Length: 116
Image (cartoon, rainbow, N blue to C red; front, side, top):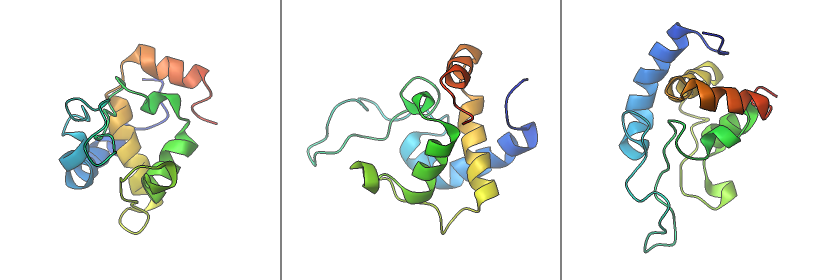
């Protein structure tokens, strides 16, 4: 309750997340083991999106930009999904992983200007 998204978006987002994101970020958006340790190729493994890592530090606009363009502009390897997911589907994916954020983390995100 009190979040920017609807349960319908979360439900749709879950299916989209499982189909497009879970292979790297985990079905529960838990990320990979040792996600903070640089791999041999110089990249970091996919981080958790469930509120236990840094995703909540980014406003909705930034989360959407990363989902749309991927991680390459930031030195990462995540692919972009602009040609795969519509804008509404991208919102649904974000709503799914944000639904996994504890209320305390979601509130901190709001206080940081998450909806701006």
